Image (cartoon, rainbow, N blue to C red; front, side):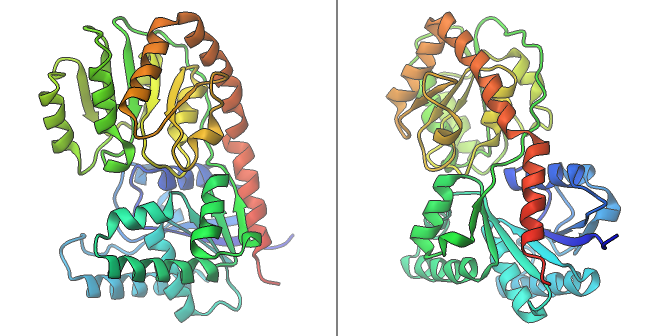
Length: 374
């Protein structure tokens, strides 16, 4: 029997984002007879840490972010990754997120690539993220150049949506033959819904500009429905700004932001509809999770992901991104047309089944095998 393929998965930590969620689901479902996976993390933190067995972790225990200079941090990360590579000697490295992809590129260059295949996964609108993160135009150009060199150097690039893959090829001159689209795995266990009254809209995501929660708050305020509620689950740097906006709009009694929630199903059970108000996305796992529970969904037609998941007026509503008026109209349609909401929710369940964890894991396994060196 051949030896299992040794796979090193590189992440910064096990925070509650889509990349980390995907890794956890992959670790829980991968064929352990064919693969020996380990997750290499720089910081031992995040709500998903408890879902990965300690024997499956390689932990660097770096100083907390902000406690050291940026040059020192870069050196520490390279040293940590090289220790992991030398200790584990993987057949394949799978890196996730732009920062870890760039770090993996340099670490693998130092370590040597002769016997190690490398797959990098991109899970967001890379160019938009770079423009949002770096305001200095010279630094932005430099970061874009480094990102392009990194992405062109991988054996394979895993894009989590078709639009994202096309964007990588166009914006970073990546060979399209290197790009493979694999959607995110989603736990699609249906729940028995008991929607609450008054109606309650639900949204989930990091509290950052990308997610468009400021637009959602304005749209919700324009509903002119005196009792409807809005719950936004997630945490992030925009919390204070969003809290101030809630107060300015007079929504203190109708909008809740409870923070990060590891089990969103309890909210899916009670919600009237799910709303994704993003300005851009990489995919949008939570949309499928909501659909699997039979929730009618209202999503924006942003780049990338949601328009590939949802077919307008078939299994959800797709509205113009960055438009308060379009969001408001979508919410009103769900509130005012119970037959439409029920039909969309029933069709959503069928669509969500196409993103099962088992099916996506098999696709990951095939991709991992494709880059193993002879």
